[in-house]
Length: 367
Image (cartoon, rainbow, N blue to C red; front, top):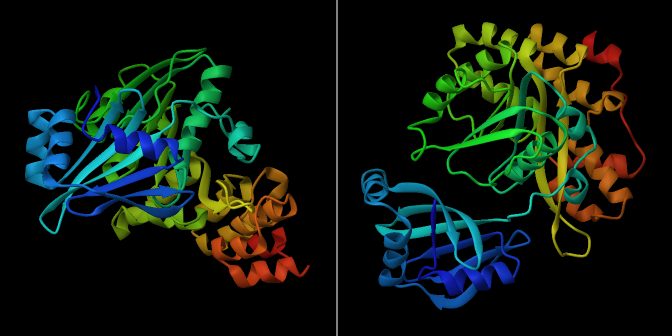
């Protein structure tokens, strides 16, 4: 991870002071920042010298060679006097562009983030797989950091994180942390996962599941008594299961699904919704826990009924996106209009807002 005062310093300082989550810079275009989910344009135009100077200041010759060959490079950077950033350097229309995600130093608690209390219970698990899903910028890394920090404060464990790049930095509290960055400390996620098994971990955090090899290694780690925390790009909890299975060939999916049924702890799907006052955003979560009903549906390949199982599983801490949105409306945190825009089933949400609820009893789920 680089640590310097760069040509981007004034831009990054301005962005952070304005509350931006992301900074977008490309040659010959106005610098743009994302504030509360909206793109805001500045009047500063970046030239080639400005961009190339930054790249020279934050990358090694080896990293520049990767950028030249692949057209993309992910690194961490700490801007002196400003803070830490996750950086992607890439080419677009033959020009160079840089996207920087501001990583706040402070790891916030579940309560501060507005996350469901059930995440605390999920963080107490000793083995299995917890998958946090959502689109880019939905707060997956922030939620994952909150879970790891809770573990750090309450459990005596050996935690190994494998990230590309490292985002949140952890200091040992009750747990012993080792953080490995792909491309610097290890050559790949797969290599780090394989070797992690010989490093006596209790908990392994994998920044992102990208392929079948990684997920097979994660399943093996869970099967041998470890807790694995990871993220995946998927829009909701049931789709997460399908996304995992899609990593494998058709003839491999049945044993993977059975292994998933035996090893899955929970799926937490997340989106961000603009607060009612327009300042800041609040997480909206769908939570699927591997209850006996969910396990049965996974074992029997009745994945189309997972949504109904989640909807009727409130007693076990489960919730759908719509149920979470209704709670946030009732608490006065978001508007009905914003909730309908965020929902993946807006017609059902409109019915719920009118007091109409369809029964999703257990007999319908497993009958």
